[in-house]
Length: 132
Image (tube, rainbow, N blue to C red; front, side, top):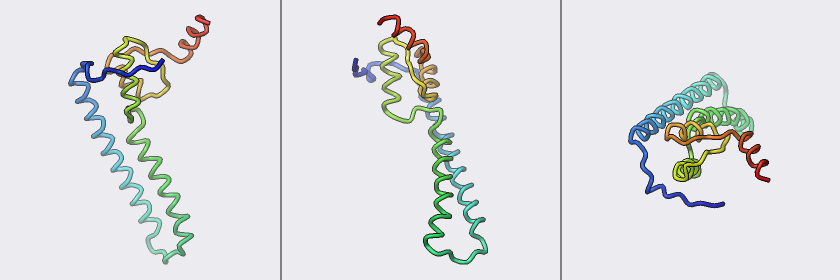
């Protein structure tokens, strides 16, 4: 079943949005700190070295860029809602007074804050098999 939520008709406490804004501000700060740490590591790695050939430079710096991306993504996106689809799932569950079934920890965390109940995938599977 596909359902379009009525997100403009659902009331949510302003305190929830204050918490969300604080969460994003904290994540942005952590992302910045991760970036600073990776830049410092890179500078330390290249201090006192002669200029590397382009290919060797790209290989060396590529490892650092990969580490930066992974750490930044973890610092800013893990444990939060980070897409419109995440928000829509929560709003549809709230509107329909249904339980949310997801393994996404950020969606579960914010659904709880908004007052949406959740159901584990195992319990959901058992209930679905009972209907078959």
